[in-house]
Length: 136
Image (tube, rainbow, N blue to C red; front, top):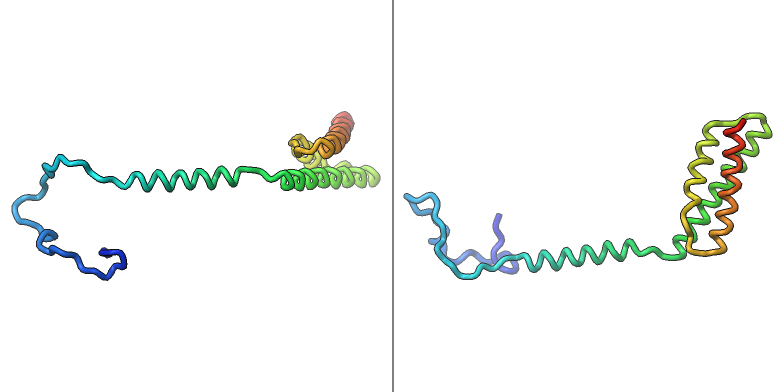
């Protein structure tokens, strides 16, 4: 389906040029004039996409702090599960796996020095518990 004109309602002018001529199947244009291409518009839209991606990658400090608090709470919850399991006399391998994953998540900086020091203390406690479990 072809759409002609800005609103799509105009019929093409010069219907004779749209007809095929009998005899020749293919011909190369001998026009040596400059050709107009649509690459300028495409590069402009790519620049717009790059700009949007760059803006999305900018991280908000409050978002980093929120994620750090969540990682710290997760690590404390898993430490609590480990404590309850040890009080029951059960050392669950699943809990130890979650503790290892929590320790890996605590290494990322939050951007806040106070928050980072608290996360470092939680990470130290997690590493101590993992070392004790490995030696047992």
